[in-house]
Image (cartoon, rainbow, N blue to C red; front, side):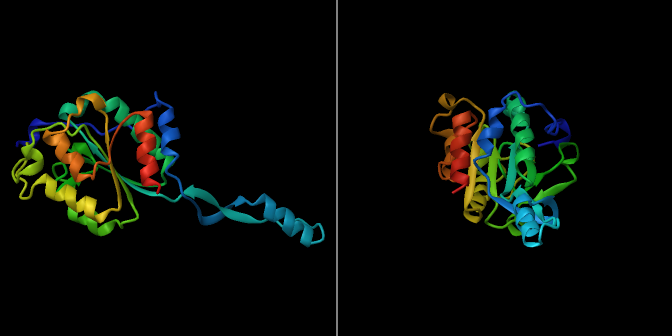
Amino acid sequence: KVWDQRNYLNLDDNVQLGIRNIKVALRRLRRFARQGAADELDMNDTIRSTARNAGLLDIRMVPERHNAVKVLLFFDVGGSMDPHVRVCEELFSAAKTEFKHMETFYFHNCLYESVWKNNVRRMNERTETWDILRKYGQDYRVIFVGDAMMAPYEVTHPGGSVEHWNEEAGATWMQRMADHFDKLVWLNPAPEDHWGNGGSLGAIRTLVNNKMYPMTLSGLEDAMRFLSK
């Protein structure tokens, strides 16, 4: 429970993707809209308007099309997640290019009363989980990334965190997230045949209504398909 004994690094969003298909899978979660200043040529409307204008060029502009889907991305860092840093960085890089409206947070093992955006300053710059529930609407798509491998009491009991005293169990906070957001999934980088049905992984899987998917191409596609409904 001594914060100073653990040092985590932020994920690098500039990593070149080794698994290009991650981007392809994420593209299933798209809902385009035109927003902002009109700075993109609308060729079809320009032709129609010019024809109506007796051949005098009448240029028409429209806002650029962006993916309007809004995403909250939570990464588990440290401990048993260390072997999965590379694939998490690949996912992070792909997500940043695909989602214009995305906020990223970090947690360790299980969600508790606060998360953070910068691992270097995580001891004194934290975001209250209640603030996330108040600030972000139900239309946000929520993605947790973690192996869900921990002592079961870290999920089920107050004081279960290995780093600080949590007044309420991690399960309580996960349930609040699942109740607030209509679309929530958990991506697990651990091999699916290692999951099992009990322990902390079974508890997390139940809390996310069995919407836990392996971080494979088919798993990502299934997760994005659910989030896009």
